[in-house]
Image 1 (cartoon, rainbow, N blue to C red):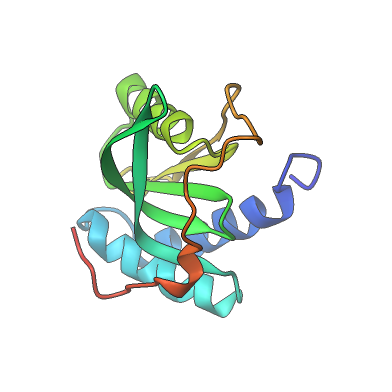
Image 2 (image 1 turned 90 degrees about the vertical axis):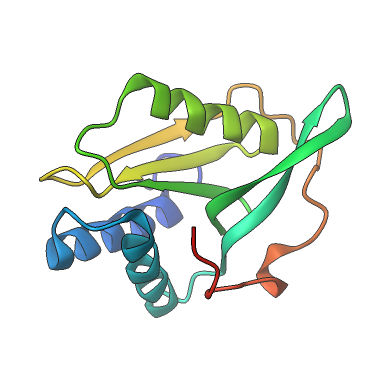
Length: 147
């Protein structure tokens, strides 16, 4: 995956997700996987924020906020699910978040199926000139926040 943009980081995240799924299996609530993945990310020494609140913009106006499950290295969003099967709507939702956050790369990871499912998403509308998340999230890690 090193050939992809931020492939070295997404490879670590996916590997950590496989370790969590292989240890816990499927059947837990999303927050359990989120807590376990947080522990794995700490072991990898990745900078991340869990449950980081991101502003949503429309026509250059902030219209609300949404929390991303993880924002890693201040550039990759990670959305977790614990569903039997991912549907197209979940992929579309994760892509909408990438576009709304103006992040280039994201991962959608589903722990709910018998085999770990993941999708690596690329925001084709990404604009590096726009920076909607001015607060560096690494100073705002809040591991006790649950859904």
